[in-house]
Length: 114
Image 1 (cartoon, rainbow, N blue to C red):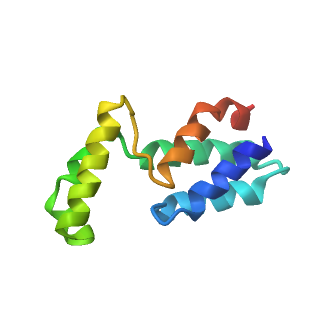
Image 2 (image 1 turned 90 degrees about the vertical axis):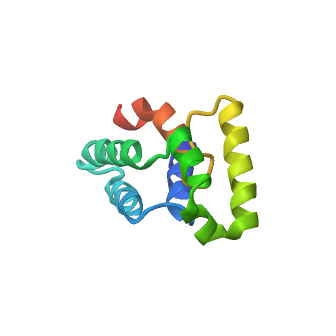
Image 3 (image 1 turned 135 degrees about the horizontal axis):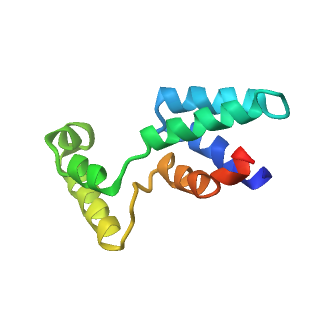
């Protein structure tokens, strides 16, 4: 369980983590060892499922004009190549600092919900 909590904290501290997920993480962490823990865990899982970026969404974004605006032309090319590689390797989700631990949390959600 401690390893899973560390993954949850890592997810929330990643620069790519959205505000809604950060809030759900904090609510969950605040609820640990209380009567609200299971409810907070359920809400956290729902938020992760809403926020995690599927690989096709990552590839689409990486090849977009918006990616060029954010990362510059060369940065976007590298990002797009990485996203394409990731998809070719069979990945189902983004591997950023928020999504990678989110995948692990979702894979072990029964521990949180138990």
